[in-house]
Image 1: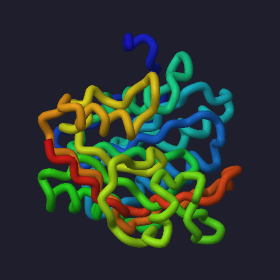
Image 2: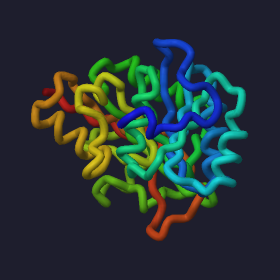
Image 3: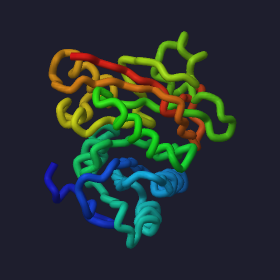
Image 4: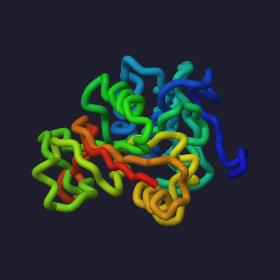
Length: 244
């Protein structure tokens, strides 16, 4: 994508340093109240060095103005606006490419971290296992605390284990983390199909030199909006280990 297709709107144009822990990428398309809550949740993470990148893909001018005000003057956040909607994987690729953190975290714009140390715990999981390529989170409905089944990307038989860690072959994009090395090696998210499964497929096919594990752990993200299908589980839940 040409740089002219990306307009810097607010915050800082680029992260001020290299070698920080994590980039949190949030996509925006209206739904401004929930998006601002997601931004505040990411900015409120403690015990970790991080940069928050918001990629707007066509919000109304009033909504974009509010997003710009949310990160105005901050040196740890960037808001950019795209000329057109590139979809979820395309937008996340753009946001991830703007950052320099060693872990890339995708957070839906209607989700929030359930605790202020979740990002630190995610980073610690990667630090503890050099073969860990990605983490899937448990996603719950904010109003009830129940699993958000609309975001459950695993076999139904595993639902009783939603509060546990387990190995998997994919992860849910609504709340996940991926090692930048793995993201680079896989060529990013697939802008044609979708995000999580394609990265795994390319690794399994031998397109990656990284031993990529998807780790599902019990760290929860809360979904602020009710989806048409039942709740999903986005806590730090599963560990998927792919040995190539």
